Figure 1 (cartoon, one colour):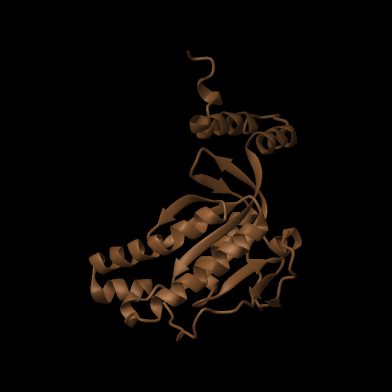
Figure 2: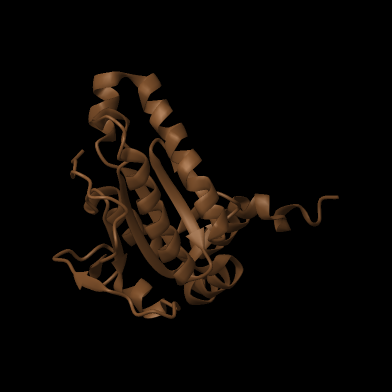
Amino acid sequence: MPYFRTLFMENSHERLIRMLSRRAEEGADREAIDNKIWDTFGETWSVMFTDLSGFSRNSANFGIIHFIQVIVESEKLFAPILNEHNAFIIKREGDSLMILFHKPKDALAAAIDMQRAAQQFSLSKPDEEKVILCLGISHGRILRLGSNEIFGNAVNSASKLGEDTAGPHEILVTNDFIDAYDGEAALDVEQIDFKPPGSDKAFFVKYQHAVLADPETD
């Protein structure tokens, strides 16, 4: 049955390539094609990126098996929390996760619960076994292809905040996320001196830590 082949979600990449090929043709109506791409693949999500602080140093000092063990321990901590808050994991790369939420309030609740779970777990662990989490969250319209590829400003800003900017135990969010936030309680945030790509501002989220942990850096 060849007629439906490119319309299945798993063939999104092929479908997009065909649209981009038409867009590259001389005289193409790029605005119309761009609108069709967004209408076909565009979705609005809260995007979260996570990173484990100190991971590169610890994996170098203690080896790849230790690297994998800490990942497994973090999965055991975070999986039930993400399930509770209606998350979809799009991709895992090493110690980093790319996660989607339909509702900003779910994204923030998950972020706080993940931080507290990691802090509580780490309280009785030696430094090399602690799960020390960094988080970045944004919100906006993205292009989603299949089950594990997403593109857009919200992706870029959340990635920069979570993987490169956030320190140990920190939750950083963009102004786009704050504007879309749908929780009942007001956010307690403080602007930081960094403008992530794809957003105008970024903020540090203030929340009650589960424990007082000593900060570590990568």
